[in-house]
Length: 447
Image 1 (cartoon, rainbow, N blue to C red):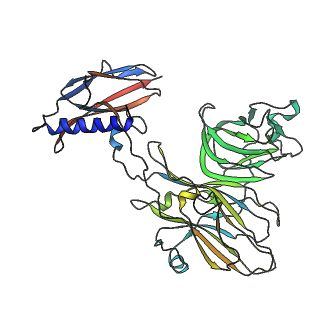
Image 2 (image 1 turned 90 degrees about the vertical axis):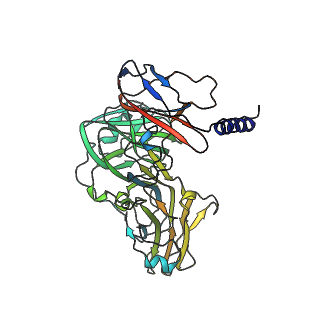
Image 3 (image 1 turned 60 degrees about the vertical axis):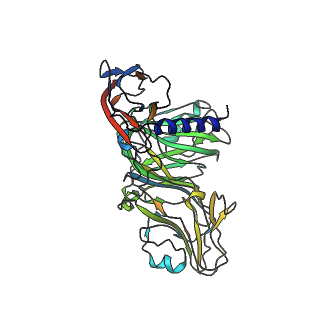
C-alpha cells in the first residue's frame, strides 16, 4: 500500500477512536525492572502495568532526554569556524572579523556604521619559546622507510621528514606522558600534498575529539583553536594527493589567542598566505536569551605604495555545544550564513559569493595593485541565534492508540557506561483532553 495512504489511514483511525471517547479515563500506568544495575549491552526489560494507550520511551542518553523534549534554546558553547586564505600582496591587517549584538539587520553603510562591532581577528601569532611537542613519544600509522620515522617531524629540521605510507587514513601522534594544555599547532609540509586533515586530541589514545579540521597544510601554517587539555595529540589525514608528510609539527599554548580568530598564515611579504582554518569560542556574545548576533567580514585597504591583499573565506559554520554534549549546527555553510554584501568605498573591488548567489561556497574579494584607491567592503551574515537548539530531544514510541496488541514490556540495551534517567511518558487522550503520567527510573550501566 502507498505510504501516504497508510499514514492517512492511521491518522483517520486515531481521530475516529479519539472522537468516540466522551470521557478520557485517568491514565493508570507503572513500570519496573528486576534490578537497577546492568552491564553494557545487557538487555533490560521494562515491564508495564495499567491502562495507558500511548507510551513513549526516553532512554536518558544524549538526544533522548525527556527533560529536554521542548528545549529551544540553551546557553552552551557556541563556536565559529571558517578557513581564510590571503592572496598575494604586502599590506597587513586588511581583514577584520566582527561581531555585533546591536546591529539592526538593515544592511547598508549607515546602519553598519551605527552598530557596535567587536573585532575578534588576529593577523599574526606571537609564539612562546616552549614547543610542547619536543621530548615526547612519537608514533605513526606507518612510514615509507626507516629514515622517514615519526620522530623526524620533531627534530627542528626541515631537511628531515616523516612520510606516511599512503595519501589517506594516515596519522602522526604525540603521547605527552601527562595532561598538557594547548591551543595552537604549527604544521610544515615538505611536499604539498594534504587535501583534508584533522587535529585531534585524546586522554587515553583511543577515543579522539577534533580540535580543528582543515584542507591544505602548506609550507608553514599556524592554526589556533580553543584550548584543550589532553595526554595525546595527532594529525589525522583524511585525504591527500600522494603520501602525506610533515617536516615539522609544533605545539604551543598561546593564551592571547583564546576567543580570537587567527587568520591566514602569511610567511612572506608579497606571497599568498596559507589556507588556515580557525575555531573561535563566541560564548562572550551569547549573554541574551537567544544570543542573537551578526557576524561580518570587513576588508579595508589603504591607498599607498604597498600592494593590498585580497581574501578567500570558506568552510563557514556556527555550532552550539550544549551541556549534555549535543552539538547543534546553527549555520552549516556559506549559503546558510545568508551573507549580504555592502560596498562602502571603491566599487572596483567588492566581496562576491562564488560560484553564485544562490548556493555559494566561497566568500571572496580581490585587490588591485599598489596605489589603488582606498577600499572598504563588508559581508554581513543574517541574524545568528548562538543559543539556538536546532532539534529538541526525542523519545521512541512504544505503543499508541492504534496498536492492535499493546505490549506489556519494552526491551532496551545501553552501549555506554553511565547513570541514566529513563523516562516513560504514558497518556490517554481525545481531541479535547489528555491525561498523562510520567514515570522515571534510575538505571546504572557498568562496563
